[in-house]
Length: 344
Image 1 (cartoon, rainbow, N blue to C red):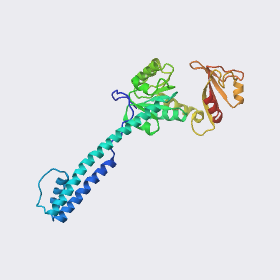
Image 2: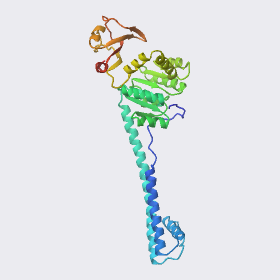
Image 3: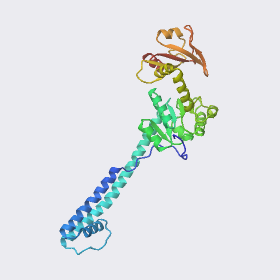
Image 4: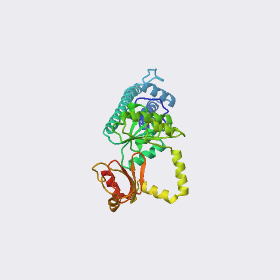
C-alpha cells in the first residue's frame, strides 16, 4: 500500500522467508561429492570409461534398479554397495533437512508474528500510518524523530518489508478493513494518518477509523483536486495534498527564502538549539493559569493562542492568562521546550 490495489485479505504479519541460497548450495555439494567420488572409484577399480562410470554411479545413488553397465568383480560390487548406502542416506537425509528447514522457517515466522502482535497490543497513544510509500516513509520518520510510536499498515510486500527494515512495527493487511485497524490498536491510538495513493481508499480508511475511534486525530492525503472535501466529510481533522503543499513550498522559497529556511530549521528534529512547538494547556498542568509574560521570562515566546478549530489569537499581550483547553504555538530553545512539552 503505496496503493492498496491488491485484493483485500485478513490482516497478518510478515510471512517467513523462503529457503535461502545457502541451503541450495549445501544440497548441491552433498549430491555432487558422492557422484564425483563414485565415478572415480569405478574408473580406478574397474577400469571403466568416464561415461560408463558416471552412469553406473548415478543409477546406483538414485536406487533406480537398472542392471550393471559391465560385469563387476568382488571389489566392484563392494563399491556399488557402498554407493547404494550413500544414495539411500542422501535421499532420506535430504528429505529430513528440507522438512526441518521448512518447519523451522514457518515456526520462525509464527514467532515473529506473535512478537509483533504482542508489541502492537502493548502500545497506547501511538500513531497508525496507512501506506508506506515515499510520502508515508517520510511521515513515519518524522513521527519517530518526534518521539512517537508508529504502526504501519500496508498490503504490498515491498512496502511493508521496507517499513520493517526501517524499524517500524507492521500489520500486513487492508487498512479499509475494521479488523486490520483493530489489530493496529486503533482504539488506543492517538492518531491515524492515511497516505495511500488512492483517494477512494483514503476516504474509506477515514470513515472506518472515525467510526472505530471518535477521539482519533485523523490526517488524510488528498491526491486529486476536490478529494480534500470528501476526506473532511468522512471525518478527517486535517487534509494535505502533497502536490499543493509542494507548490506552495516552492513559491515561498522564491518569495521569502529566509523565512522558509528559518521555519524549517525551527521545526526540524536535528541538533538545533532553537525550536517551535505546539503545547496543549491542560487543567492543573504546568501552563494552566500562567500569563504570557511569565512564560516569556522563562524563555518561552508565545506566537499565538489557538482556541477551538483554527481560532487564532496571534501575538498575545504579556498580561494574557492562558486557560485549560487552549493551545499555544510557542518558540524557544529546544532544552526549554522539550521537557515542557512532555509535561504538558
